[in-house]
Image 1 (cartoon, helix red, strand yellow):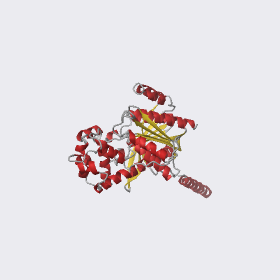
Image 2 (cartoon, rainbow, N blue to C red):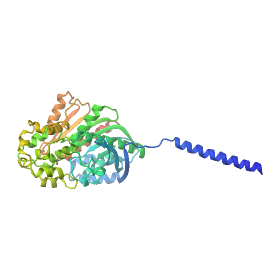
Image 3 (cartoon, helix red, strand yellow):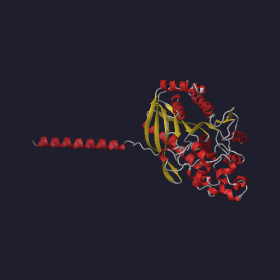
Length: 412
């Protein structure tokens, strides 16, 4: 009887040791950690035939889109994500859209920087079924992981103001989203991403894309292998935009210029009171209209297209020479982009009839790249004949996406 009890005790001890060893082995397994990604959820999925059918319908209005439809290959999933970034030394939770192919494989990232928006409800993660964002999502079907950041002040960070055309925060926010996208794929999905990166955007997004391109090239960390960059109708030279608007009798989009000053005043980069720059009542309106509840058209309706009525006479006539406005000129210069000797294939597009962001800004940028010694095989300028700021969006996007798809396909 004693031997039986001893045998039972021995078996219990051995079993306990085995369980303990299993626990130790489990603890030794690497734990998945995300340094940037906070959360992800599937918004929707699209089948290949569904996307082709939708693009066929869209092609009735924009025939250029048929070329995109012809290159679709995979079913896709569309995610909303939140991620960590920083602003003014503080951690911020930001957000955006990510679209991925459902077919196993290794894919490059395509990052799209959105154009000017003032409505919280129109941010990519808040309005993912918008036709423009759908088109971007569908690009994943052609062999990309597509990243579309909301920017600060929208989506998960809508409790703060949007630092419009602020170089530092824009680069930080977009770069951190790219890192979050890498974590989403590597740690939570079945597909893989390569280091290859394609970047594009239009208007504010064109400016943001060129800022991002320059930052990646100059920092040269090797984290991203930038393959190509396409920048559409961006206000690359804010000083030029300022002088252009001040030289007009009427400017049709006063909310654009008001947005710049709203952001730079709130950042503290412009130290003048708003009343030094804008006449009453527009000085106070420009500080308060950009709260996320009003569209650009609604903001325009509360401003004026008359530059003589919008700006103070002192600012309109002496902004470039009066030391009183030195912080304005400094802020505009600091957030503009100077050409550099890029080695990345770069496309610049602009409508020839653009009265919001004048085409000459893009022409100047292209010429400046050439003056820096950039080979003409690396830099291309496409003028879109007769197109205004809004009507050039689709032609610019289609030219960009067809180019990216051909470059990506050429590698395989």
